[in-house]
Image (cartoon, rainbow, N blue to C red; front, side, top):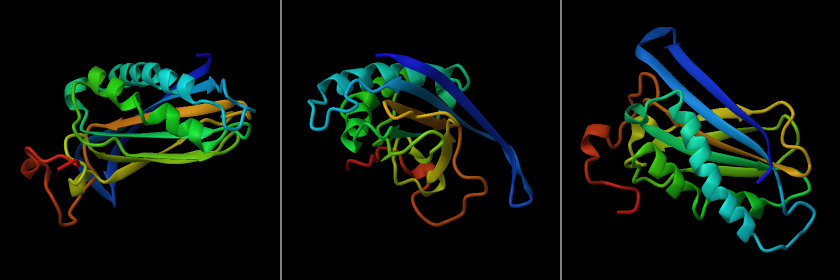
Length: 190
C-alpha cells in the first residue's frame, strides 16, 4: 500500500438550531489517500484491494482513537472516493469484505453494520459519510452523516478512504424510533 497522505478532521459542535448542546458533539474523520494499484486495469482481480482494506481499517481506526477514546465512540460510518482511472468496485473491495472487522477490533466492538457510501470523483470531491449507532443501526437518534473532503484528492490513480466516528447522536434528536437505551441485544442483523 502506497499512502500519499493521511488526514484527520475533527468537528466539535457546540450549538445546533440556536441552542447549546448539553455537551459538545465530536465527529472525527480519519482519511487515507492511497495509490490505486488497479488504476487503469478495468476488470482486474480486486483481491489486492481487499487486503489493503484490512490494513486501512486498522490504521484509520487507530487515528480516530488518537482523538476520541474508544469508550466514547458511539457511531461509525465509512466512505470511499475512487479517482477517475479506477472503478466503483475498487471502493467496494477496500471498504466491504474486511475493513469493518479491522475497525471493530481497534475500537472494541460495534455489532451494527458500518454504513457506507462510495463514488468515483476527482480532486476536491466531497462525500457524505453516513453514521449509525455502532451497536444497533436502527437507533433513530444516531442517524447522521459527516461531509468529508480533501482538496487535492483523489487524483486519477488514487483512492480516498474515510472512516468517521462520533461520540454521540444528532444534536437535540427527537424523531420517533428505537432509542439507544432500548437497543440492548438488537443488531441490524436481527
